[in-house]
Length: 538
Ligand code: GLC
Ligand code: CA
Image 1 (spheres, rainbow, N blue to C red):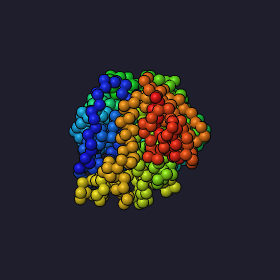
Image 2: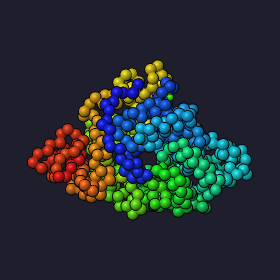
Image 3: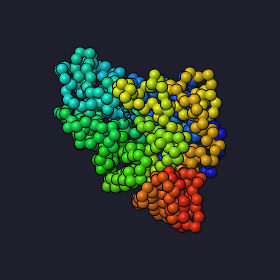
Image 4: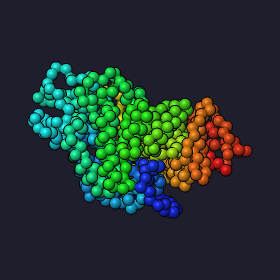
């Protein structure tokens, strides 16, 4: 089933570092869409396990798996019913243990997704809270007395008010879908239970957690109105949402979680912190809190050298003040695929390849989203097949996130190798022309995006200036330059975001370019529009 992949030369084994996460390349696996082993049309743990050799071949260090827990199915697994179990769609606990064991054997770390801000409305706690308003479980959520108007002006990120009514008329808070009631983290029983969840998985050998909505667990203690409305076009939440997000007490939760991780050497936490002010984001990664917090500036920037330069410099500065690495993101399961964001087709692909070389050069930890190494575009998903609550709650006004969650194409056979032959239809329809992006096809093609990723990751591993250098950022017109100085050598990444070819001085050799059209002669590189190059000094 797995494609035949050429063996890598075995690198000299470096001493394992407890702080492996500082420059690790993390590959995000959207479990439901990665590989289906049993033919039900749903990606699963056994399927992922069978594809681990592909991830080793590609050259990543770790994988982050989107939620694998029993779920109410209202938000792609982010509405969890049981935090210490595996959804039968994906397999069972033994499958997960076998996955972790195999991955560790192959030198890959496994990071799970943990969702502490809200549970599913099917969670036993919420069910008990509905049945008995005076139960201890009711205090673990945010309920308000029956009244005509919702208790405040907070809006759900998925559209509409953040309050819905229980069958007996009370209000309850959900910053996401109504099926995702927010937990009350001011109740100590909530924190105690999550301690157990962390230990449950850490005891099974996982190397850490991606923490969902890490900036939201604690709410204003009086649930006062927000001063303004959130706009999804912003870089993240700011003062206009001051009552909902980023309450000072939330940092106590991360100190508590950090202390637990410290009992398991070599484990880490990476937080999703969607705040517009990166200095505030960085505070979540002070030395006794989360090891990393995502920097989302690049994933939210258009194709613009000044915006990219600012996104890079601001993140480097912010995280330097707390001594944490920057976690770079160009793609994930919540945003349109970068090929499409950057213009689609050949243009978007060229730009996505170039942006990836920039990201992989930067000091810190890049997160790669499964399928971006295949240059997958945002898939067109027919409205009737869409599942994302964002699409449904906005009455179709917002397209939703299904188009970046379509299953992976592994080969050129009908069904593109996602499921075994004769399987049920995939859970989201795969576009008819998806085989052009298949792994099998791109492994044969020396110019493919998959080949570029693999080369880039091998070079990044061989040249510590890439990923661990001291970066100096500059722009000249539409050309962005990041010089990465390592202890022994310096590699410069030049990204041409303009419409014209740029002439760039080459102080040494071209290590890698995002296109074969780079011309290198007499100490000058001619860098076409929408391309990037890595230059090794000396
Ligand atoms: C995070 C996840 C997103 C999910 C939301 C609610 O933003 O990345 O997919 O819908 O949290 O859990
Ligand atoms: Ca399956």
